[in-house]
Length: 355
Length: 225
Ligand SMILES: [Zn+2]
Image (cartoon, rainbow over the protein chains, first blue to last red):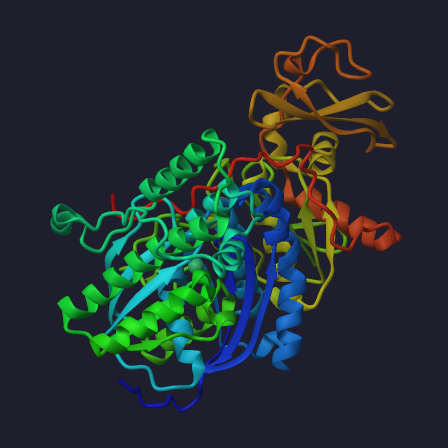
């Protein structure tokens, strides 16, 4: 679907603080002017996962310099902005609140309208900034350290349906936890990838969560990685107890294969069941080479076209938040009031929070 | 004019003119919900004062101490507002504003201090605020020429502690607790510090007084169940 180009494309600044990246993006309509990201990932490394209070403190420190850097890169001034956009949820409450407080005050100081938007739908909107014509409906698979969601997008600004999501850990968290079990550093994704390069993905058959025939009725598109995590931990413990050397490469490759298999299988099942020959991938875990390769290979066989935005737009960022707001503006959506808050469990059907 | 924003307890927003006159002061006493109310409070303060954001020349940010999640909302808002207008942010300890309000009846929002001891020239003045987790944050001032001068920096004390507060014969639990910060007093202090060249306008750290809790996030909670 291609919308008519609005007479004047809105200049929007987006603020994203839902997890550990402070993202400030500036777009003019569908054109990306700046995608500035300050990450606190390194501060979480010694804890093996995102520490909410550490993330929230880092957001407060990073916001002002990130906004200044984004404005400088975009070559615009703040008073030219047509709107300010911010992630209202879902995400870590304390982290979201930093962005919400800043966005409201910035909007008031500029006299600019404010758009409070959904983080997950933002991930889908990132694809618009690639400059290609995006077609809907599409199935979207969003995989990161914070979420693992399968969505059906009929229209970006008005009709997004949650088909399924993780019942326990996000896929990215599963990578972090298995990396810890294997004695690899945080973040686990790239480490598991490195270790898996020399391994056999079929060496060990780890369980595929919620993939039995009996799961299809209630959890066809949902994910679960806790059973897989336990299975890997048990397998490793048994080898260690027997005094054997743990074949780290094979464990990493087999674990990764189990995650990738279940993600791609369910995503393509959703495409088939809904008659949608398009699959959009988003979220930081898309950086995983094996996930992209398997998705592309199996989608091609199934006649499904796969779209993967550049990684800088797949990880959490403010540009996707600005892009979603720009689309909302172009579609005639009214601004949010100033009364919305941070909603850590914001449902995906709430594309914009009116307040 | 100076915009004062403090979210170390409730949410407080005020506009004062350079001479210190209070043009508007709006408070939400709710110790949560700072992110929800901050925008409306700003809007209402401008409406009440009959001025616009372009009339603001500096923003005073209450740096705490206070519960972190709420505290950050006000500091983030103060910095973003200032950025939007290209004006400085003046970092002010929230307790300094509380002490000022106790010492100067012009800052009426400090009505909660009615049960506190009268402020006497040359005598110590304690500011006690909630710090959650069965602790309070305490600072001590001495009133000199009608102005509170901080002599003990903010620090945490167990509510149940029987140790007397420095310069006081009584523990913190027996001292009056401040339950509202005057954003007008905060803005007045910022105006004075700007005038005297003593304002801290670079990005100061919030007065957290506590290292972060290391609880690993389980990620955003599930939606819809
Ligand atoms: Zn995300």
